[in-house]
Length: 139
Image 1 (cartoon, rainbow, N blue to C red):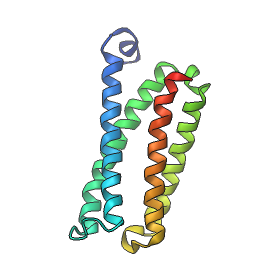
Image 2: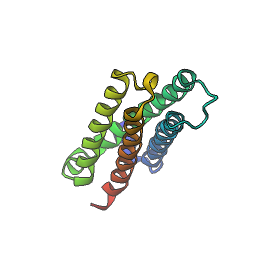
Image 3: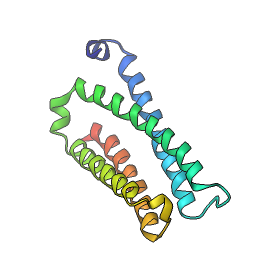
Image 4: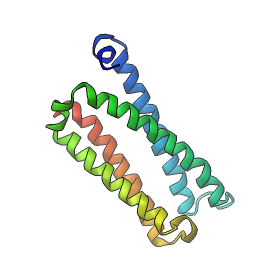
């Protein structure tokens, strides 16, 4: 698989497309849920929307993780010495911790000010992850 990524002209760009589609699924569905947490679409039951949007966000994360690991495997030494990549990995850990905290405290049930702050922080961290991902090529 790694040899194909390095030798076929279309393989790596196709992997990048998969990565971008995963980002769209992940971030788009988190923003959708965030809008509901902030009170938009109040007619939509939070539990039902969360079940749909979070399952799609998890599918997106799966695509991002799998494609990201494959892209990493093609040039690990270069990426490990790249500051944007390092910051991206730290931000991913922060996003995971925030998600664990959000779900651990049942923020979807509470829908309080802290839940809104957690959702906003999640979106901002994920946007920063995307920015760092783009900066990797330039540092």
